Amino acid sequence: MSYFSTRSDLLTQYSAELSQLHETCTHHLSAFAPRLQQAGKALLQRYTAHWQGIDWVQPLVLNEAWSVPLPSRQTLTLANALTTLHTQIQTEAMNNDSWRSTELLPLGSLLYTQALHQYQQLFPPTSHFWRLLEGYYLEWTEATLREQQRKWGAVRRYTQEDILQLAGTRALLKIHGAAVVMLTDNQRVIVPLGSILDHIHIALQLMDGIINWRDDMQARRVTYFLTEVAIDLKVPEMSGLGRLNLERFMITTPLLVKVANKALDHLSAAQKVAGRLDVPALASYIDALETTCRQVSHHLSYDLIDTRGRLGRAAVSASF
Image (cartoon, rainbow, N blue to C red; front, side, top):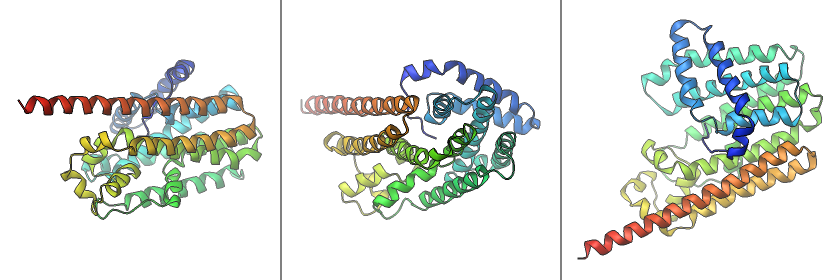
């Protein structure tokens, strides 16, 4: 899940909806068997500590952008939340060999089944929505497996196609978007909205790689950013990064800003498509993401400058 934060004004705008969502999810999980109920509430607590994450706020933006009626809005938001929690369990199980992760798989299956039940209240079996849902789930599965196959071994450069396919790791978020536009009789925007969300999700993946590079190193998780670091340092194996002082390297390389700019390019592409749809709430949302992206890049760059100063002072002290 992305913990890339939205601007505080967006969080304030949707604070009531987020609070209601937490209450609804908790109530829904209370109907599970005791063991699954406990695991589900613990999972919810762990991830709603990051309400600012795009996975939670984005559906609320889309609901408003297309003026989804309140009863349907609540059903859609719950369905997306259950799908998001399901995704986390599946992703953790694939990235973690621990018994704890695999133990949660039955909960993950139940959460997704419950999400489908929510959508069944809104769409008949013959609706085109179900074909879209199947396609998004297949896209997510293939993309997640493809990224998982990037082992902590030989460095393999991300091609432009690889970067575009990063969007697939968040394809399940497009289920909610498709549901929104179909419920409001705006089927014509399914394709452009999918393109917008893909660009947003690529940007989030790139920014997450910058923000969380230390955690990714520790978990031996291959990302676009760490791959670019390895290529820049001419390290043939990802494991070679662990033998280098990456803190010092980050101070001197423009790579962080370069990758942040690539993320901004994708947000600009999303904004360009959104401009043709003439949906002000969506355009404002992308603008907020662009602002946040610039703020994060600036903040991280400032941190590196501060680190450079501290290392310099330490070197001077050591010379006396």
